[in-house]
Amino acid sequence: PSPSPAYNTSYATPHLEHQGRMWTAGAASGRFSRAAVVAVSLIPGEDAAARGFCSEVLAYLEDACATNPKRGPGAGRTCLYGLQRTPLGDQAGGVPTIVRLEGRAQAAVVVPHLLPFLATNAAPALRLSFDPASSDAAGLAAALATEGAIALTHVSADTPDAFAARVQAEEPFNVVDGRVLDELADARAGTGFPLAGQFVSTLLCFGHAKSARAGDEAFVAEFEASDKWLKMAPPA
Image 1: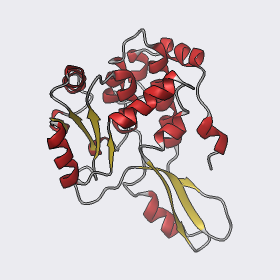
Image 2: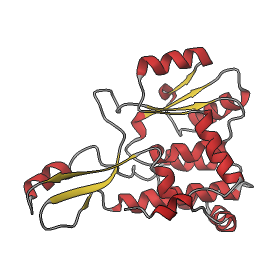
Image 3: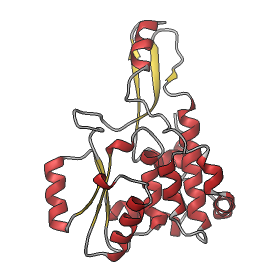
């Protein structure tokens, strides 16, 4: 369970700046996927707080996925719980989450939203759409694709009208658009970056599966192996 005060808690900027200054792509490569490391490296080095927040998000994912799913307590039933991928559905890679870049898209607020996917087995569900009329959005999308953070086949240029039609047709699980990105930018400018766990919960699923039988090891064996549970991607 997550304590209620955590939703109104933010990181101290000096802490994030320290974490950001400690971030090096070389050291991170042994722990996280190449896609995640490349994405964080696109944040300017002088923005230590943003890099530090990304470091906290990755550390949270690493810790949460170290044992995932987890066995729940209780004598009267058998329960598994933990972080999950977004719905798998019948589409290749799962039901998509589309991150939409437009206007003055900045790596410092875009990249944190990508990391829960790029660093894990949820990556196949991630899609990136950018407004071709925005040089900032097009430039960031190009950098993410050419540097290998996201597959070219998962990146598309969509005018506002084309994007609206696409969302209606594809029915994605989630759309991370300018409004959502601005919320993180506003939080950073105000109270500060949110805690990693609360932030990740806006993008991925927390859930559980349970059997009404106590000590149901057949249930555990079946559901523990499900592809739905979130796992860290192999490190670079």
